[in-house]
View 1 (cartoon, rainbow, N blue to C red):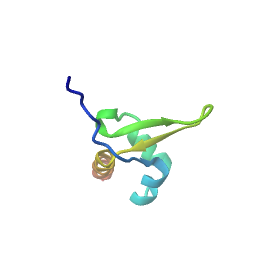
View 2 (spheres, helix red, strand yellow):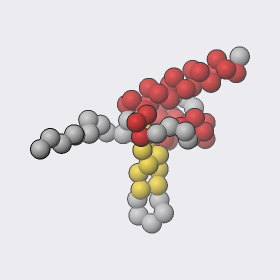
View 3 (tube, helix red, strand yellow):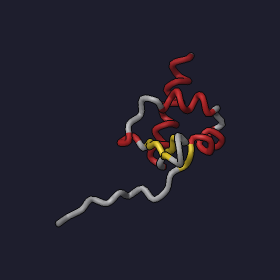
View 4 (cartoon, rainbow, N blue to C red):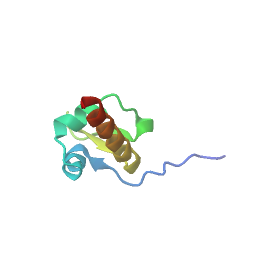
Length: 75
């Protein structure tokens, strides 16, 4: 029996990613809303109704590309 293992060993919360990229959390959320788990984004659920969006390293790279494309589109 062969099992596929997830190679992601850590994720960063949207707050941390926004700070690292010099963007607002709202802007990162707007860019990430259409991303799928295959793009490197996941929802992390805590107690009650608490949840936070988080990104793998691959997801952060995808966000950087989305930010760059958004800047180019705005010109």
